[in-house]
Length: 186
Image (cartoon, rainbow, N blue to C red; front, side, top):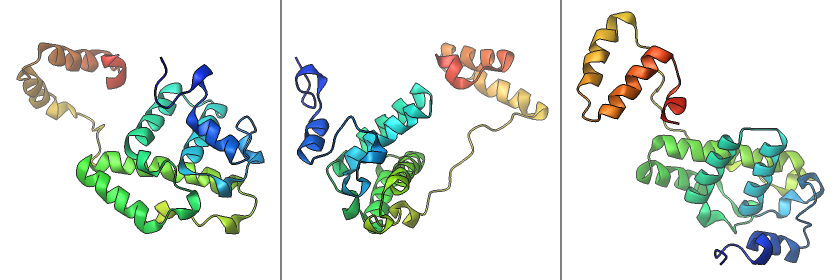
């Protein structure tokens, strides 16, 4: 009836762990001791912070999905145990296995998460500096290139050769309507 990460009434194992460590899961993060957080608690607190700042639900879901997919092995790791070499190694691993853009997005998310902990910690000496500073981000290719009028004929001929007719129509509709790709596919 319930998944492995949920107990009765929707209580997660993470909440149980917080209670066992003496942390009130209902208290705002400012009242908790950030230096005692695990990566899992950090990620949950940042998601709550995003909701408090009224970020779009889609953005929050994307960030949570990346964390769950790529940082699950760090879930129970205390923040104080994270090292710069671990973060660099994770970025390198993700770059090779999942792609450079995914690795960059994941590390940017984690950098923002960690910065939250640095903002709310009472004693800044108890948490090391953000380990993501040690990452050299991959160069990314710009995706939203403008099609100049001189290039429009070549672009049109290229999309006419696409084997999927729906894909062709999507590109044509995008050209005529000016809709963003995310809105087109929705």
